[in-house]
Image (tube, rainbow, N blue to C red):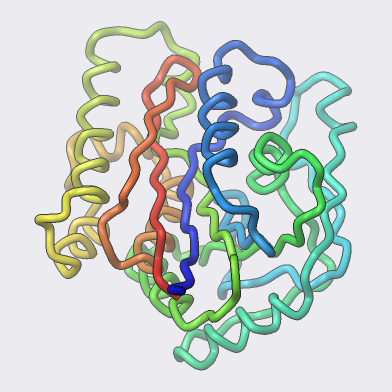
Length: 269
């Protein structure tokens, strides 16, 4: 039987709002629950979070990482959220070794906790918190080609039933989220989402061209309107580099009134 790795890019919403019953996140919560229901149960989860940047790719290696409430201005219950999933130090070491063997300098961090890019979506998808998790940082250069290369390096990671999640947001203009919706804003949002879906899903696009499009993502329609800063897009680059094939499934969700995308790949391992 051919083994596969599930690779998933998700739009994870605004801070803890998906867990606080915010109506603007209802569609996202439903989509994540549906996705989790379709996936085989993973043995471990690797999350590339938009909310952690480091000088080199850095991997959580603690046995029981705490939670980092890396958001501000929410009600007290937002700081009482629990998600006591275990870490997986052995998997962290394998990821570190895999990156180093690919010529990518990397680092282990046994003290850092899990940020909300991990615990918010996973509390929705796997509420029992019984699947070991490891988190991988972005590189603070925010260079698109670097993150594609990290994904390609992770192809050599041979782990049974691993789920890899790029946890970001396909639309991340904070001002636009809370501004009155206009036809112009909606058109900009939709144009970028259409470009992203085509880039990730169109089987007619060769992989070299797919990579080139993502390296030069700023050329996409309204790219810098949708991503004034690209940290929420780059987890997608890691996923595409790892999958190196068209996404089989595109899932659209309306989050805070904006169209946002999620992508799923099943990758032979």
